Length: 237
Ligand SMILES: CC(C)(COP(=O)(O)OP(=O)(O)OC[C@H]1O[C@@H](n2cnc3c(N)ncnc32)[C@H](O)[C@@H]1O)[C@@H](O)C(=O)NCCC(=O)NCCS
Ligand SMILES: Nc1ncnc2c1ncn2[C@@H]1O[C@H](COP(=O)(O)OP(=O)(O)OP(=O)(O)O)[C@@H](O)[C@H]1O
Image (cartoon, protein in one colour):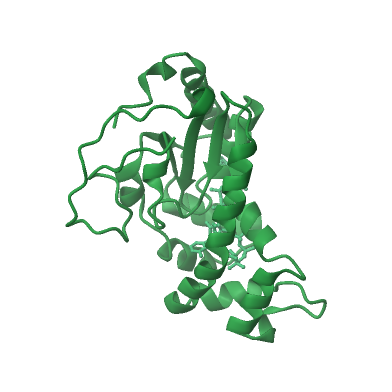
């Protein structure tokens, strides 16, 4: 199920000077399972895509959900976060104060790296466990906001990137989620660019139109993935 590394697939943190072996055709995993990595910038529409894929029978593993699980009250992850960032990131009830921690990590790259080093290994461990439970022959979709930033593209049979214009994404955060424009821009700044994501994409889904348009594109992708030859999608690398 692991895709071979290829020169065009290092994450932005990867070493561009290291020669990778020539890409070969990745075989879908055991029982014909296809592992799809889904990513995109904040508010690009990843969850909307994942939801539609799930409605079409895919098994979806959501890294944002797993990162919340990793920092649940009473857990070791949250204790490590409190030790690293102080009690001010906890609520009176001992839960994570997400706004307080967000304000710290999205204005300080070193703090963000520290948080990521606490959360990401836990997310990966949980994702692996869920992946292993998927029925053979499934389309398994991992929705990972930081797939490119963390150099994970090579482990997927197919990388799907959702794109929407930055101004539209900021508008969605501010109007639909009551976020501030400054927070939206700080998060965008903390992530890879669309160009970096496009570099590792097998499929780019444009989400600058309506949700119906997006769902139609997802349906087309799922139709191709459910065909026995995977619609020529897998192994194009
Ligand atoms: C800082 C935290 C507490 C803020 O919580 P909040 O509820 O405001 O945001 P939420 O978790 O719902 O994330 C919303 C979006 O923010 C972006 N984002 C979150 N964490 C990060 C990060 N470390 N770097 C860049 N972007 C991020 C993603 O696009 C994500 O989809 C939280 O995001 C967190 O624990 N982040 C670290 C874990 C992480 O990297 N998660 C992303 C995928 S594993
Ligand atoms: N084509 C669209 N038209 C209008 N609204 C949309 C469209 N696509 C997504 N949205 C809305 O924009 C917001 C962000 O979408 P979504 O939650 O799917 O993005 P995301 O990439 O998963 O975000 P995050 O990185 O925060 O997890 C949601 O409120 C969603 O309903």
